[in-house]
Image (cartoon, rainbow, N blue to C red; front, side, top):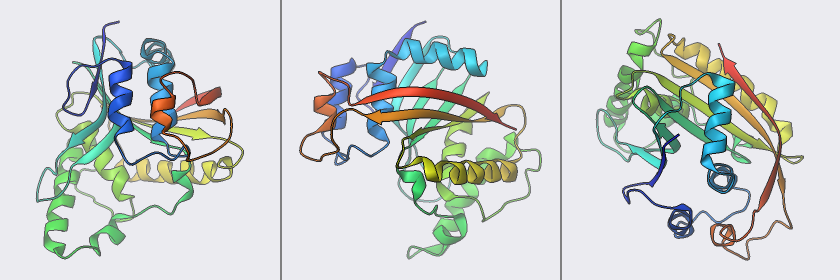
Amino acid sequence: MNTQIKFKQTGNCDCNTLLDQFAKTTVHSIMTSSIPLVQFWIKSAPEIQLTKLEKLSKITMKDVTLWFEYPTSPLQGRGGSSMTDLMILSEENKVAIEAKYTEYLNEPETVSKWLGLGENPQNRKTVLEGWWNKIAPFRRNAKIFSNDIEYQFLHRTASACNGAKKAVVIYQLFYDEKTCKGLELFKQKIRQYVDIINPTSDLEFYIWEIETGLIGKETNGYNPFEKMKTENLFVFGKEKLDCIM
């Protein structure tokens, strides 16, 4: 397996260079999903995780590139890029991984709510139409839109579909004793969103649950990405990968 690791536009990099890039961001809370995500895919050896994913999902993982914070500009209209937590790219597949830890305890922002924000509602409608149009070839009922879907889920899905032969969206859900209470409700919502998409066989959705334990105390007194260079911050336990039909 030939694995390359990229971070934004910096090109190929090793583990420590990637951690340096993350250390410069403002996301330093140990309870933020990007931190267990990076440890899981980098410190735990990406080859091991890719082999595991290939075995559990039957998704071909050959000559892949792991690209953290993968940007997809609005396909119509103006606005900021949609940043996928991790995009796994190959000739055969485009796999978008969206990580959640404490974030799934928050109320999701639906398309309806998003359309009501901002100073240019017409541009928002144009951006929305662009996302939907990119997903349309991967849907069984391509002409039916719904504003009940979460906006982030929509443009993450569109990012996976953009330029893909086979698109995959994986929600990687890290949970512990504090967050597991909201896990089932969030999974239910994801299943409802997938039902709205009504995907063809060229678009697959998965939920990957990972039991997560914090090593040491929860504190904001250090930069977790710097600390991760020399030690693990989490221990991972039980895992479960489900395909959403």
